[in-house]
Image 1 (cartoon, protein in one colour):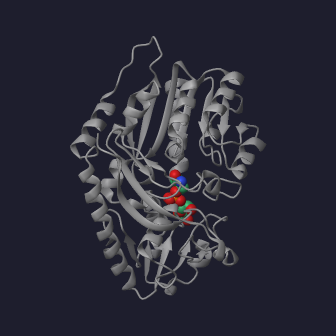
Image 2: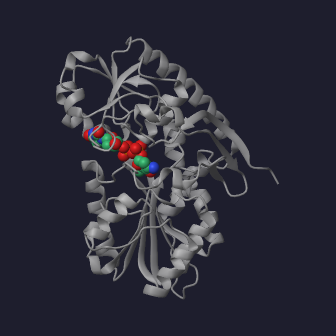
Image 3: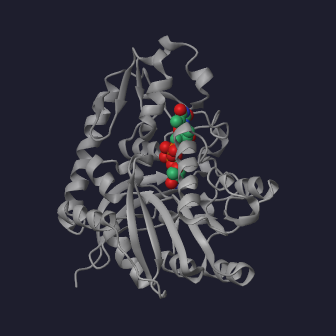
Length: 393
Ligand code: DWN
């Protein structure tokens, strides 16, 4: 049997959401960001994972409701779940600021959120909230208190779980014969196709293919019934799964079969694909640096994303190249970006003098449509993205 093999080294990295002030620079945490491929499960995973408590605590700054695109996405998702399943109970794992769960009645909803700043939000609004990391023990407690759950939903959460086996065992504990587990995460295939290696950072110990999930869910007595491609977060997959411990006949959709076929065609279960990806990442770095440096420091970045933490630290980009980053999130403003220490300003401040800069790096490239639509005043600037390769828009 072939062994799990490393294919990517993105070097020394800070916590992707570890925005910091000047006085915290000396004690900033760093780790080595490397990924490996397991030929047995087809799973792509991080090699040395920083402890979850370092990232998800009382000052986690990322708000799920921070964009029009995602608010629309959660609204549509909630409507589709209501009309397809009409759940009497819904559990969301990783509720963040409640962007999704707020579409459901408080009486029917359960929230799980380890970041206490966000758990306090939903709890204060009357939603039953467990301010804990998802675990088998928590699942058993919920089962004792509430029985089986009709719909379990998790958006951009399963790929954050360190102990995937225990997390999935916990989910299975709560699935009755008619329950459904719906989860969405960035797609490995989209990352390979777009060379969007910035999907890789401390909070993502895994990036999933349907191929890998198919095997792992089966191991935990669950079966995938449907897969949908979603445009959000740079290309995601939404997986629908149910327990195999059910007398109800299981139907696996065309969406499921098509995704498996597409992934096989594109080499997701072949180590060579990852070696080629790693080479493409190195080339992307060289080209992006060349483009940015040519602007002699007259570049800003749009969106202080976790993704751009990976880019800036892997490419060695600092304030000499990117003057500042603009971001609407109050909890990120007036701080420095992790590792690269680029100042973060509010859009009002950063865009008050348009002659301050010539080019804009699109850190939040996954919101390209929303951003270009609202920033018509910046249409004469050079917009730079690294997806799917470094280029001007
Ligand atoms: O899984 C994760 C994903 C879903 O979200 C996390 N682990 C953390 C986070 O990753 P990210 O920071 O790369 O996510 P976003 O959603 O790409 O971040 C967008 C950032 O850009 C936010 O800080 C908000 C900001 N923004 C802005 O300033 N102006 C976004 C838009 C659309 C805008 O117009």
